[in-house]
Structure formats: C-alpha cells, structure tokens
Length: 403
Ligand SMILES: *Cc1c(COP(=O)(O)O)cnc(C)c1O
Image 1 (cartoon, protein in one colour):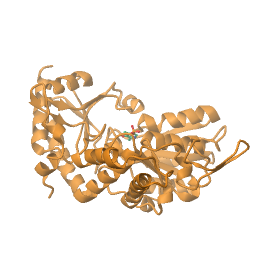
Image 2: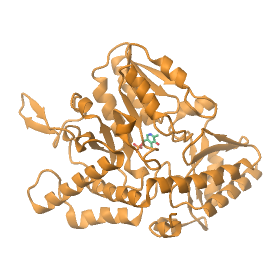
Image 3: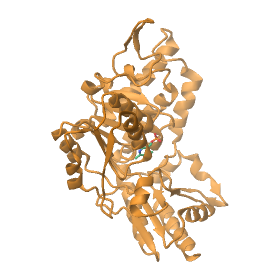
Image 4: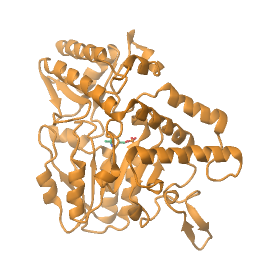
C-alpha cells in the first residue's frame, strides 16, 4: 500500500487554502501537480548544470547532455521502446501529433483517408484536419455507444483501400474509456495502415509497452505525469521514422549544411531541431523515477478506489448523469447534474475549495455526440484521498440542492 500522507508531503501546493478551505485538486487530467523532487531537479539543473546540450566539449555541456540522454533511456525503459533512436523529445503530445501529421501528410494525396474516433482531444483532430485540407484528405470517424465504448465493427468497416493512417486516444480525457489499442492496431495493420496512439491520459495511470501494443507512434506529455511542463515524447518505430522527412529545420537536426543541400542527423536528432527544453527533459527523468518508485500499478489501484467512491457517491445525487461508464475505465468522472451549467457547478465548487474542469474539455465533437455544451470533470491522481472524495461528493450535493 502507498503511504498517501507521506506522498502529500511532497506537494506544498496541497497546503493552500482556497476561499478559506483546503484545496482539493481534482483537475489532474488537465495537469498533475509536481512533487518537490521534480521541482528540485529543475532548480538543480539551472543552479548547477546549465549548459547547452550536444554542442560543447566542456564539462557542463557534457553533464547536461548526459542528463538529457539519461532521460531518453529512462523513457525507453518506461514505455518499453526497443531503442533510444525511437524516443523523440517534443513540447508535448500536441507537438508529437503535429510532427507525425505533418511529416506523414507529405506523402498523402487527394482521396486518401485518415481514421480518428469521436472521442479525440482537439490535438488529435486539428493537426489531421490541417493536413487534410492541404492534401484534400478525408477524415473518417469511429462512433461510440452511449456508455462511451468505441464501436469496433464500425471501426473495421471504415477501412478502405484509401485508408492511409489511424490515430486514436489510448484513454479518453473525458470518458476515461481505455480503448482496446492492441486490437485496434492489429486491425489497422491487417489493412497495412500505420497507427498513432495518443497516450497523454494513459501513461500517468497504466504500464505502457509500445512493442507489445505494436504501436507505430505513441505520444505522451510530461506535465500530466508529475513532470515539468513543456516536454513530451513521441515514440516512433525506427523503420517509419527513418523514412519520414524532418518536421522542423534548424540546429541539432543536421548532418552537413551547405547552401545547396543539407543532410540530416541520425535518429532521434533528425526530429529535434533547435535547443530542446533540456531542463525540463532532465526533470522528466526524475518524474519517471518517481512513478517507477511508487509503481504504476499501485498508483492505478489507489486511483480506482477513489473513482469507485466518487462514482458511488455521485450516483446518490438527484439528477446526476455520468458520462463514460465503460468497463475498466480510468480514474476520471465526467458528469452533469440536472440542467446545471458546468461552469456554474465549477465556480460554486471552487468557492468550496475544489478544483474541477468544466466546459468542453478540448473535445467539442464528443460534446456534440452527447448533445451537451460541456461537462464537469473530476480526475484523480496518487495524492488524492478518500476524505477529499467524500468532501467533493458532499460539495456537489450541496451545489445541486441550490438549483
Ligand atoms: C492533454 C491531452 C492532449 C494534449 O496534450 P498537451 O500536453 O496539451 O500537448 C492530447 N490528448 C489527450 C487525450 C490529452 O488528454
């Protein structure tokens, strides 16, 4: 069992009072809080190791390079990639998806099709739409059932000889549905189509093995997994990455530059133009050590206890509607009570010290699917407690009774 009280000691932000009440932070799917050891890793980098990476022969530059490359190896182990050549540092999931869409899009043309799902985050819709407009590529969308489960038969039926790419969230940021990634990838591969899995909501809560999934691309965001902001990872299979054109040009990503022609660096550097956020990358290494030390399975088990308590408690409130009730869902509960606007609920909960997400959650097509403007979302992390969940449920009950 995890010692949650001890874990909370590393989050001084949890000692804050909001409106005279202790903060209850339930907006973890937007960004997780950051433990002191990760903050210290950022500070330590600035205070003792700051030098640009991969350039200098001097000691500080070597140290910074070692920290960045050390994190690359930690990421490789954490997601079970075959090689560090397949681990590309980005600014986040959004940039990882844009990189793949932009680079793969170059080889797409009029009439080609890309399959997405209706539960995608805008960052796994808009990059494909931009490519789609440029190359006149059509988006096909996998529907869901009311409980938030993808229709796999419909998915399989969407494949045609024109399908060029599939992209979907491993775990929905709204419904918390854990999509059957392995099976969906296998179906796509049977049609000879590569797949990108958006792992932003999966990596903080599930042990990930990109090779077991056979994912062609997989993305994550550091700030959602106890790491610093501004850093993410794109995993890609070497045989695909090596054939793809660079996404951005600049320093670090070149082999030899003349005004006639430029050759590119080897993987993964071909896709890392410019100075990376080497401070953030170093601290991401600390966040990965932290998650490994706690144990992803233990984190998930604790969060599921919280989810079960929250779900059971909320269901006792008159007029409660929970969106996303798939078997084995992640630790997120999205809901509306009666016809109370999600912003009103969010504002009133804030008055009671409780931070939840309101609105469309960067998933407007999913809101349209359910015929709502927005939802209230509570999402859990390792430092949340059953006591907080009880206070949250009672606060929702109190707000609901006001309407
Ligand atoms: C947060 C999120 C993203 C975007 O991540 P950024 O860190 O903002 O780039 C994409 N997909 C899902 C499912 C998310 O939850």
